[in-house]
Length: 507
Ligand code: AHR
Image 1 (tube, protein in one colour):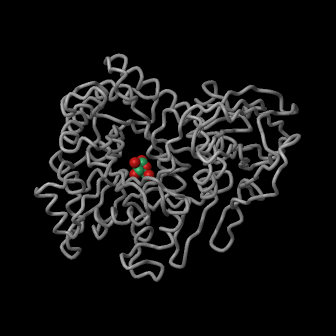
Image 2: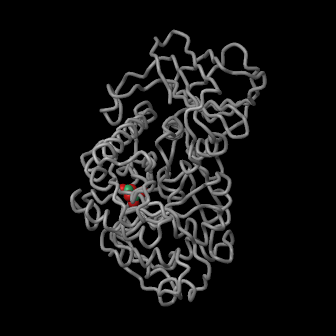
Image 3: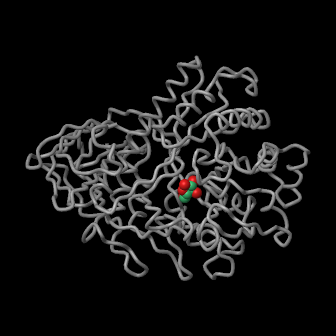
């Protein structure tokens, strides 16, 4: 959470934090990833058999190392829009028997060479939790239950035995399951009305929890401020004890998913666009509360959290999905991603998971080539936040000037401010205060009074570059995270133009 007071551009800004003012725990899952059968994300991304950079399973070792480096806690799979025609049984068992299928989301061909066991094994090697999304387009409830049984059951039953037959004795214990993806979207095979979706989601949720009550179920929302979100929450967040063994501390739906992509060709609308996501989170959280109040859900049932399971900078006209959506990210985009991450820190009380879409090659900070990896500009804020911005959110009070021009989307203006210094702060479990400040101003640095720095040794990390159009390419990665000279915590600290700065000190 942050409070914000506007001042004139020629006035001196100030930031106040107090490491004792802890607000909420940050769920590590905000640093989640997403791998879809789309473009070069799976094939040529995480899975590249025959490449000398791959291991004996065909997994790219450099990608695994990168995932470990950002300590990715959870990865969503297999889509995305792809999942609306995906039948998981096509992707298990002997590879030579797996059928090739037409793929309708991105108009391709799916070989099914990579499927459930390959993904779940990859997750184990990376050390991340899998998050599977169910096919609500052409899929059936029987298939969904079969998939859950295949992944999690220890019983002597058909699909659990099929898993054993395929070489995996122990269950995978997949915890996170999504009840479809973007089922409101006209592009979706099997698009539904909110009424049809709610009925189906509720019945599937009941059956899934009857089979495995330990799972976390995620409802398919839209982007937050929509009648779809209101309706599906109202219909599905009830306190129906069927399937829950009468337990008054549980609910069928545990999380509500929303998606948003931001982008603009001009720097300031681009960098401030994630404020729309912050407003969307606030609205979604209010809708969750409203559904609970209207449905009389007892307080003993924990508040459902928001699963922001697709977020990023993406302009689908610039980088079309059907062409693999290989965005080339600029420093402006890296600053936008930094603001996105600040949003998740500030809203940690209500955000239970967030997944950057996607983890490799497709609208991704990480690009593979046959010879290696390129870390795009957007990799570095993700790396820095994931490394240090964990623990608990603390309050930040900011006084600075505000960008007052056009925003993308337009509705940001008037509903939430767009300060030049976008800030969030945390206290990590090992006793460090961390203050992330994104100066989105293209030309102006800000000498800023920082109240609450209680040490004379402050580590300083920066992500910046020549100009907001700077990009990283193979061999010339000019935008990275650099640890600069330390600061003694005295006087004002100057935040350079177009930069992300992370200040950290022991408390
Ligand atoms: O991440 C790319 C696509 O964007 C996903 O498949 C879909 O869910 C969203 O529209």
